Structures are given as C-alpha cells and as structure tokens.
Length: 234
Image (cartoon, rainbow, N blue to C red; front, side, top):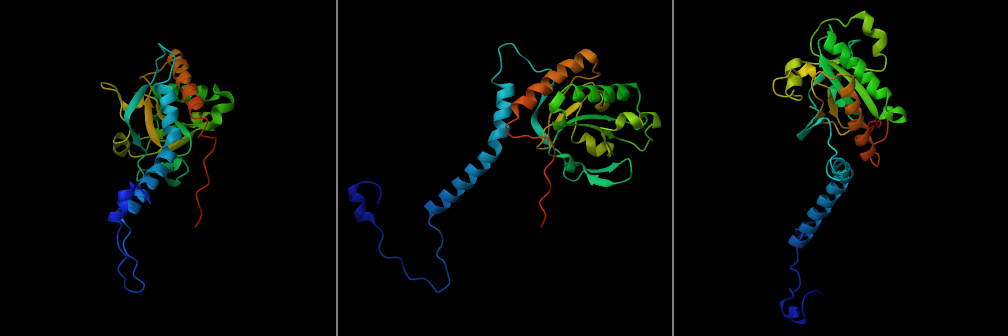
C-alpha cells in the first residue's frame, strides 16, 4: 500500500474477468517501469565510453589542450561502405570496429604526403609500447592505382583497403581549405570518427598527436582491450 491512509477510499475494486488465454494490458505504472529499466541498461552500456571522453576533454589539468580536433558530433563507420583488400577480398569497412584506428587516405600510387603519413602512422603506433596492440594503422586507398611494390615490406603491420572515394567523403571530412588525404584521422573502438589531426603532419606534430593517443588510451583503459571480439555465432 502507498500514499496516505485516506488512499484506501480510492482503492480499485476486483478486476473484471478476462477471456481465457488473453492477458490484460500492463498498467501504465508497469510500462513506465519497463521503459526506465531499458533506459538504465542503455545508459549503463554507454557510461564507460562517456566517462573516458569526459576524463579526457573535461577533467584535465589547467592549460592542457589536445592537439587534434575533436569531431562533434562523432560520425559512425558506415555499415554499408564496402572495402576491398589488396588480395581482392571483400569486407565491410564496419568490420574494423573493436580497435582504435589511426587512418590515412590516398591514392594507391602513394605520393610524398602519403609515404610520410604511412611512416608516421607506423612510428606513432610503435612508440605506444605495450599499448600499441590497441591501435591499428589503416590506409584507405581511394582509387585503382597499384600500390608500389617498394612499399610492400613496410606495410606488413598495416591494414590496407580500397574504398570508394565519394562514399568515404560522406564519412571523413578534411578541415576547411584542406584535402582529405592531407590529414590523419582517429576512430574509436566503437567505430566513431572522433578526432582529426592537423594537415601535413611533420615529426614534431606527430609527437604531439602521439600524446593525444596516449591520453585517450589511458582514459579508455577501463573498457577497451587489445584485439577484436569474436562475432557471436548463431
């Protein structure tokens, strides 16, 4: 019983009989309770991710600024964006979820900007030490140009995928006045593009970008581990 003692005067009478096998609809209070339960479960799922970003972007020492540009709102990996590996295998780009991704974009011919990005991606990942296995470095090739054979040995630890340039441009976006291939992009393990590093990085800029990576990896350590989870089997 709830409410004041006088609430007995408003107690409902016996429930009317219902047809056999027909369940009466849930009372409004029960429906509200079910909705609140679902909402709390959803918030519980998001809480670790939200807490890590809150720690990184809000609870931080006075005067500290991130080097990369935060993407607001974040943009999820397109589930329908197809990718083709260099060996011809087809797979959805969405399959890259589950790891932090440091992404570069460019032609398969790989000009000087492209080569510099690939070098910096490898160096930034290796410099993370034991945390490097939580980060994949990804090169998204936007045309059919063959990849120079001279790069093959350097790409052993990279994920190289061909994607449609126009479809990719609906997900990733350069800074105003810059080209898509002039940046490195950071995607979180949930598949959200969440940061863009300044165009045409040099070694000094890469060192600053690495510090952003280190802070994000520390902030997400409570919910992110190295490696992707195996998909559930039916």
